[in-house]
Image (tube, rainbow, N blue to C red):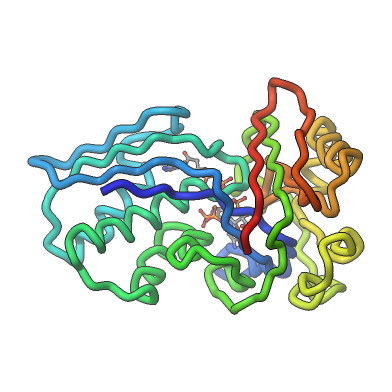
Length: 269
Ligand SMILES: C[C@@](CO)(OP(=O)(O)O)[C@H](O)COP(=O)(O)OP(=O)(O)OC[C@H]1O[C@@H](n2ccc(N)nc2=O)[C@H](O)[C@@H]1O
Ligand SMILES: Nc1ncnc2c1ncn2[C@@H]1O[C@H](COP(=O)(O)OP(=O)(O)O)[C@@H](O)[C@H]1O
């Protein structure tokens, strides 16, 4: 069975407070994109994971697809499978690709072996694999809070807009990014701000990881400036970085260094 785990972007990311478990409470809107990996899972004689495409650091037993398999096989009598992941989404890029791979492994095993798990049950499994993993079970735009693993409905109006993503070939570790942050309550209400037109988000919608990443890597800050120069209604870094995105009113042909990876798509939600 083949599926296409997709990247997400964060529309706004406020890191509010440090929790007693060491994680942070945040608020954000997670929005799925069309930039995908390719994941194939087939019943097999013995358990095997292999990947092609972008090399994954710490591959092997630490891979989130295998972790997802082991998590479910602790509760269900799963036959061995052959998992082939073709990695396309940049890693450590703020795009949640690893979390998407894990969530889609859970969904595929559920379908393949007719486990009949509800979305709520699959989200509970996904939460054990990563804070933003549960989002990819339903995989529709959500206002997210808590560790990024609690959700509320949000009505996002980006239909017919055009999205450009720019990955500057710079890995940023999520754990290190959180360690360098100074959490604080947001001054603007994110849910209300996101109901406004995208061209006014610039004044109200922010990503709290931007200052530290932009200070350390000025070339990443320059991408945001360039997205605005090229006509973006709104531009921001996604997650803990390093990918930048711009939302445009119309189709654009983005002009960036060939050293960067650029992905663009029309938006339908
Ligand atoms: C920053 C965000 C925003 O959407 O996205 P990415 O940049 O990773 O895509 C997420 O919060 C990333 O979630 P995820 O990548 O699943 O993080 P996890 O694997 O659970 O945690 C990695 C590390 O980040 C820190 N962490 C993560 C989530 C959170 N709410 N508070 C934290 O402090 C912890 O130090 C943890 O050890
Ligand atoms: N299937 C996978 N794809 C990508 N990264 C994975 C995977 N499995 C484990 N990882 C680990 O997860 C981390 C990156 O997660 P990823 O979701 O790509 O980035 P981000 O957290 O910036 O969105 C890396 O440390 C990587 O080694």
